[in-house]
Structures are given as C-alpha cells and as structure tokens.
Amino acid sequence: MKEGYKAGLQVNKKPVELNPFVEEFLARVSVGAVTSLKEVDYIRSVQIHHEHDDVTVTVNGEEVSLTPFPVLIIANTLRGLVSTLKGGDDIKSLDVSVEKK
Image 1: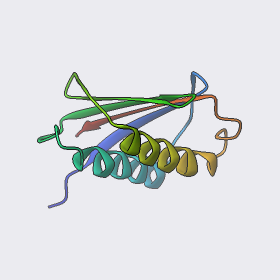
Image 2: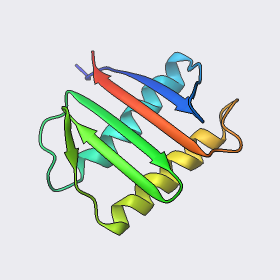
Image 3: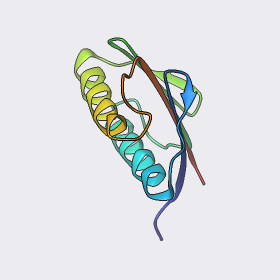
Image 4: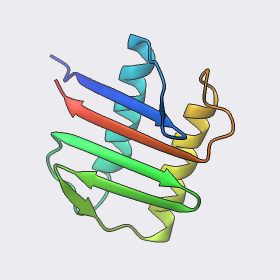
C-alpha cells in the first residue's frame, strides 16, 4: 500500500488551493527531494521555505543543514512546479508543508 501525504502551499504568504492530484504530486516531489539528503532518515513532516536565494528545510521539527547544490535543486524544482499553478506567478517566497497521513 502506498503512503499518503497531505500538503499545503503558500506563495508570497498567501495560501494556494490544491486539487488532490497537485497536492499529492507536490508532497511526493518535496519528500523525494528531502529524502535524498544525508541527514534525513524517516519523514513524518517536512517544511520547506524558499525566499530569494535561500532554502530552509525542516524535517520532523529539526532543521536540516544544506550545501549550495541541494539549495539550488530544491529551489528550482519547487519554483518550476509552483509557477505552473494558478496563483504561482511572480514568486517572491514559497512555503511547502507536508505531513504523513
């Protein structure tokens, strides 16, 4: 049985409504990116904040340290995904929250 996730998204501090497909897609992309980081083992929750050239990742309540390469990969992946959504243009900041169902 596949694991399910629920996700929330804010662009420029405003919530973006997600249909079920986009919510699951955003959750899985975020979890996939974060799972590949060295310090991450088991994921119950993920928060990703991206603003300017900075990305902050928090997993299970603990901030994960990032080198420049993962910052670029995560920022560009999320910006690309979110920019295609209604309300995802002119991104100054974005916040993604993911929790295991």
